[in-house]
Image: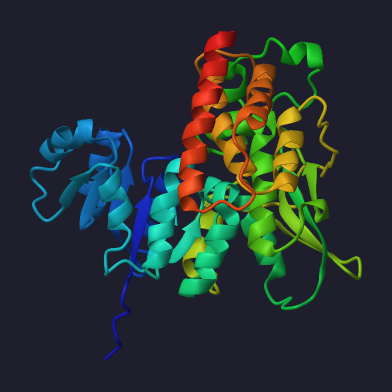
Length: 392
């Protein structure tokens, strides 16, 4: 008699976002291997309830407590699903004993504490929340080592780098090649960038990644964050991480070794692949979907990013080099500026100005701990918000 495989229990932080919904598709395709233990969302109460009806998790958490009663009512016919609300519930649910892995796919700083708690609880971390490493990379890496947990990247670029390094063991890396599409404004002049709108940027994405990250991609701040993430994940200094504008989004990133050989991962833009690889590593599972056809593929082009036009990328490198809590300041200011741009409260180029001024005005700490990060985030948001108000 064949022994039944015990399904891996997965907690998805941010299940209603683009990563979360694609992760659920992966789980559905492999329902013999994976099961949803918990789903969480911030405000998308209707979508969270729909997901809960379909996947029957043990628990759901809505971070915004105002939606608690509505979620309870929507799930009144699901007595086996426990309904929780609030930031504390979100931070505690990841520690539940049955959970095997946590997919950290919340957007922004809010993913930091739940991820830390999941690490301390010994859960495997599938990391899609880049801000966790941007803000507190050293702290997170120390905790991963201390608690002996696996942390696998879900970002398409970092998954590509990870896949390129599998089997290379101690072979020295000469440089990491980090690709990006360049966004919708890649060929715009500085004059043209003065008048672009959030609506212009949101038409663009090659990848389905949500409004905030789409704007970050247009400003190249997203790529700056990914340089920081790569530094911590792969132990490579920032000056050995080369950003390449690659409009076709076929080469998802790669590695150049000391002998000059380059290994890269190629494929169609489909986030389900890196999500599934993080779940199943070291195995590769079947994934339904489009395949890369080399006979139909476009030519592959690569360009150097213009950091004068896209100052956010330059500011990210500046924050990396400064270290301490400066990346935390950068991230907080960017979250405020990004939202302000989406609300037409600042211009596209104004985002970099707000971020730069916030970096100059927020108290710097060379050796921050978690309390410092939390305080820095609050201070930087306040300063950036004041700058937005002054300029709007």
